[in-house]
Image 1 (cartoon, helix red, strand yellow):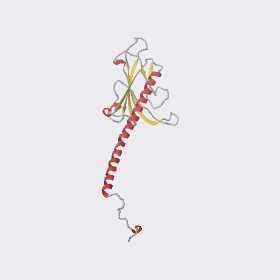
Image 2 (cartoon, rainbow, N blue to C red; image 1 turned 180 degrees about the horizontal axis):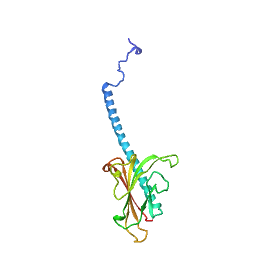
Image 3 (tube, one colour; image 1 turned 30 degrees about the vertical axis):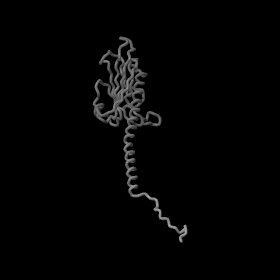
Image 4 (cartoon, rainbow, N blue to C red; image 1 turned 30 degrees about the horizontal axis):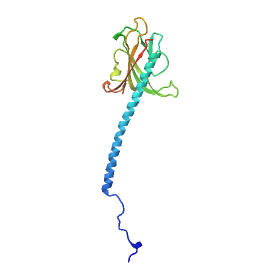
Length: 202
């Protein structure tokens, strides 16, 4: 007669079958593939968010310059180089007078690069203009061949909205700032960020 201690357990040991392992690996592979596919989307969204933020900052800076800075020759100043020093070489004078209509429309085209700026404390990397052109038509580098190192292209248009006074200087000026990215892409493939504002004539 066997005692209880001598009885051998005949229950099978717990384990995963080959089928269960294969199914689990398949589910894990599908999940990891879906997660990995989200990384490029996240990177693109981060890049677009960064560009939109930079575009808004550039437009804000240009509009602030046009509102606040007057030259000695009755014009507004727009920075056209990477240096902050207040000299004619670094700022473009945009006249605010003229007749209404197309003849009074003023345009300036800018290319922005991102470099270490030695004229600022701690030599920060900043977006600043690296090329400029004042013209009624787009320069060739704005259309197809941006300057080397350029990241963003900017078009600033200034127009008389309406004339409040024929001889005075109270006529409001509409400013449209169009920021395009990436600079090295054809014009038809760039993303545009458009900002508008109004500045006084003086």
